Length: 392
Image (cartoon, rainbow, N blue to C red; front, side, top):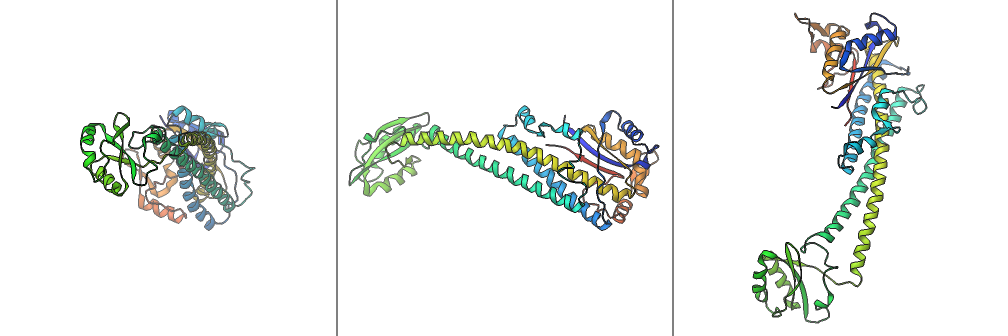
């Protein structure tokens, strides 16, 4: 079952007691057995102007979406290299060498890396640049690995394919070829085994000036037999075209001294390079996951702070928590919080005859707009600060 996290921020005035510990206990009672509630510490950042906060709210919403996309890309890159092995994936999805859940459950704002005395604009800019760097680094290294892997696969196909595709360097004995004649040349033709008899009956009459009885059975596999046939050069093109029309595959081959050994050296070289770049890609994936998750959580922290100020105003007397739940139970957490704190939405929230919370979307949109908060299409706003986080 997938773990899901929810970050919630509520004004202390919403609780019976303004004591933070009492408020935390009350919130745990509301969530009950549907999740565990942990403190989520948010520094007192520089607030700035109302217009600035509204702009930051928009910028942070976009930046968080980018964070989510980068984390998903890193996860997919690791998954592709590790063949979706859950145990190996878990060992690479670490943050600061500890499981991601440990990092979230014990999250603290990194005051050394992102000094809280900086303006919100500066912090957003720093986080944006770090995310772009992580994305580019991971993309570059995994693209390199993909390229090397493709090259290696092509070499393996040349070594291990059938006689219609594989390298002929280890197969063809140069003594079987006419190579030094002014008028004659030998062609190599891969013929499906099912029509081998047809080939032997017809090859001499495919074009003029095919040397009679010149066919040589050079090699065969489960699908094809490789024949050598000698023709006069001036009719070679016609002979090869006729072979193609018969679905017999002409193979281009030029004997090179030491070619077999050179192919093996190239295969060994690319194999070693693939191992090396694979290791580098996995290390970059581990770093990319750690960095992108950290950036995401710091962006989310700023987003919670900005929206809390826009919703609840000053002074900064809020309780922010991380609720650790599951995808199955998250709806119950949401419903419980919605029921308990719907009154924070003012006229936008009411109750029906059975006491269930109802929402007046038009009134809510109006109140949100008046508060300077955009009601983005497809985004369900709660009566309080509420964000869900789920990792791929």
